[in-house]
Length: 350
Image 1 (cartoon, rainbow, N blue to C red):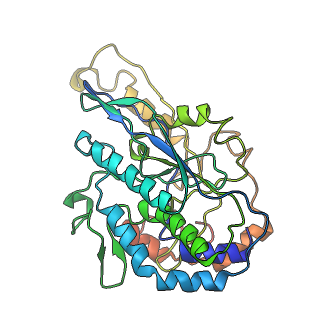
Image 2 (tube, one colour; image 1 turned 180 degrees about the horizontal axis):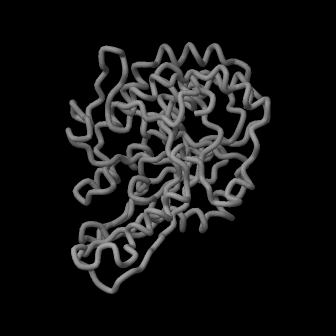
């Protein structure tokens, strides 16, 4: 991706929010509800020429800011909460909203039924929309447009499903940065190109799913099923679901950490023992488990498992030099977490 592309994306994408890939969640329930569908959108045929008319696109974005914000406002007002059966129809409605917006851009949309899930004792249909967006440029994984349940205890002083501009001109609303804003940013980019008659340099394929905050149920099966179909000719993947490093500049994330889950079980006595009788005489599973866990990682987050970093690529000098200009301050990190508990005060190390 060239510098012109990067400048364009930094300017056109509305907010980013980083998230690590999630493993499938376990859901225990008595009834079943329907999980929403997943749908694909193909926006343009492949193009071989690379456009150089970026300045007019910048002008278009600036002059259509109100329309773009209004589109985001309409999306935020849809309470597409995938983890609550009460809102499942809203997740479907958010999916239809995306279909409508994509068709306005002449996109070809295909819906995929990804089955059902059991949630809160109900069997319900899985959603075609979720809210961890992965937009695919000749993609492999999907984007999402779902949300999670919000309440005042989560720090919301406003209605989370109403987009509000604060005194610092920041747009507050559930999904404004995670992840309705980022996925709509892609639609804004496409619209700008279309209206100005500027060809996109690549063919775009998009995949949206509605269950990300609920473990992306049904997504793995869909990807496997479409591996030799819709996803067969994907050359690169772009995920629009990442945080900014600071509070002033958007950022492009070009690498993500993965997550592996393990179950560690320590067995001991066959029943719960009275500490006044047996304390100090037998090994206690909780103590042993704490000891084992303490040997897996250092207080500063360094993993101690032998060989685990053998396949991790070494940071090159060229890559390292880019860190010098990143808009990132330790003070902003500490303010965001509400404490001075960062692993180090060395900016480059973090």
